[in-house]
Image (cartoon, rainbow, N blue to C red; front, side, top):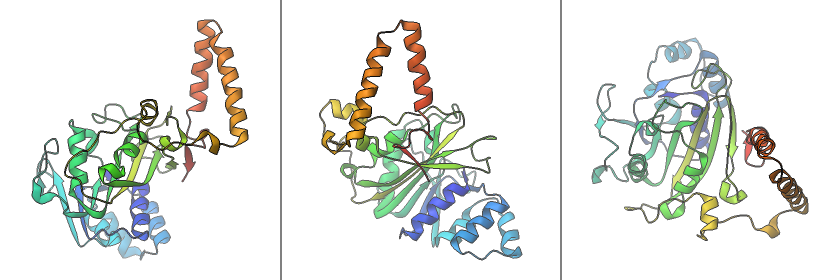
Amino acid sequence: MGLTASKINMLLEAKQDGVNFFHTLTLGRQIISLTKSEYKSVCKRYNFKCNKDSIDEFIAQEYADQFICKILNIDKLSIMDISDYEGAQIIHDLNFDIPVQLEKKYDVVIDGGTLEHIFNFPVAIFNCMKMVKDNGSIFIFSMSNNHCGHGFYQFSPELFFRLFQPEQGFQIKSVILVKHPFPGAELSKKQECYKVKDPAILGRRSSLVTKSPLGIMVHAKKIEHKNFVESFPIQSDYAKIFNTTIDTVKDKDRSKNKEINFNLKLLLRNIILKLPPSIKNFCIGYYQLWKFSLKRDKEMYTKY
């Protein structure tokens, strides 16, 4: 569980936008995954003091406690874990409901890489949501793709868009995918970030095929405390089919150019479907590899 440059930047941008980190809870104790050059870049971008003493102090830290308390103005930092092997003050197995006294206790809850390792994910995420105060925030930093076996799960953007909805007492502030080229997750100096648009707004899935590991960063704000789940999330394209109440782009709001492009795609699709199976499957497969890309699907993914 490490705080990379992209994660630190997301937290600092949220702070600039008014998020209060006064009493923060982290799931597990976070280590620092910033190089010296990345640390200098963060200091320059956010006007932090950066001299030899501050750099030496930063390098000497193994855990991120002191660093994030300083840059995020955290007055009280609490750490929750399943055991105290890394010095956590709150010992709890998130597979099970949290005690009532932990509800609405924290201004911010940060998951720096824990939820993907917890089998009972629905209980664990609802625990996190209950621990946040009204108008507080939750940040999730996890794996999204091409890191199979790292944990029990890899998460799609759709999950968090459907989960952090007003009926659950939350609203999404941002969902960002982080591409980690070689040497991989939390090791790459060059990380590419892409802001994701809600698939429900576009009316289609946020499918991706990538060569490099993808991380996911989520910021959601709590607008109302919920003691129970009113309804479980449904994937947006299925929700549309099932006629549930979910906002999608209306046909009349689409431009004429998009309508023309859609008709051309429909024509090509009908032609391809009439081809022999081997050729048809090749064409569909090649199109998926071409289309489901962070750089090509600019409607869904915006360089951030």
